Image (cartoon, rainbow, N blue to C red; front, side):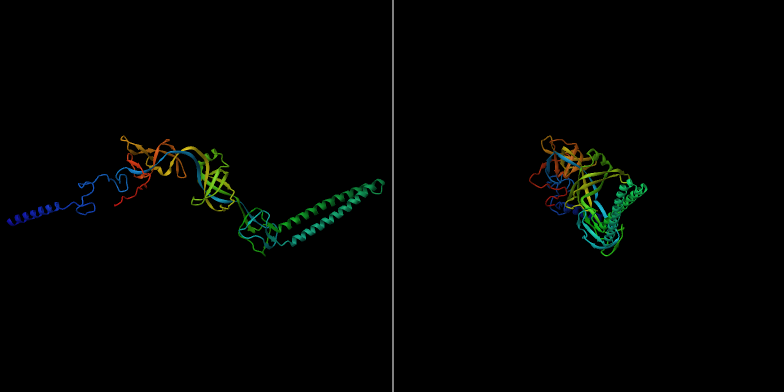
Length: 411
């Protein structure tokens, strides 16, 4: 029993001695290094480094921010949509007479003018038909001239009784028949000339030729399904695009046709052309809830090409003398948009004041304000992500504003 008591007393003495040695060790810092007092503890930390690193209050003193004043300017209001470029006119050139294709007078992708020769069909048979029609016309005209002279003599002799009245009438009918025959011959000549002209296949419109569809030496028929070549007119050119049906009211209120339209590339970075609205479709697509529109562009520089996808911007109005702020100053919260104003507290120190706003439109890095701000208000445009209502601020004019995720030096 005495041994047990002695053993217990020994363990107690060892435990007390170990605890006394632990209390004599220096305090460890935040990184587990002994000998450095922890920040914010008895070593004299300031207590101002609160919150998560990079969040509000991570830096001592007022938060440096960029400040701008609310301004007024004219703000263009655009409606944005996606469009497809279409040729102003597209014609498949087909032969109108049958024959052998003896020559092609265009290069694929060549720009041609209306009336330029594109291809030649063997004209020899059409030349022969024209000569035959001319000969028939000459024969009919000769017969008509003879009949007219006989009619004139019959009229002179009928009074003397040498020619009967019946003979005179018969001769008059013969003249009429021959006059009709001459007219038919003239029509045959005209038809032969047309066929001869169709042997020369010309461009029906000005535009760009596509790929050649028939090679030289082939026999072609009138109305060949595939045609010889497709010519597309690209100057001017059209773009068909869609907008939500809710936009129709703004478009009609702005005047509809004649509104300015801008075409941008796929990345919406480069403006390709400026044109005007020419057509508003007569019905709304119930499946998509959109309205189709067509704009026309001069396209002198050929920046637009048939089949190309472009971003369209339709100018419906300009908000004159609108209240605007930089768009990057606007923040989104659970209750809507808001900004931080540069205000002053009771002690005369600059602080951030939260202000709920309503944005009417954003354009070119500027936000048009519908309500919530007034002339003369000064808003925070950079550094606002580290602010809370009431945070002390200072305007950083000659130093960069630290981003919200920046780290203090030495951390």
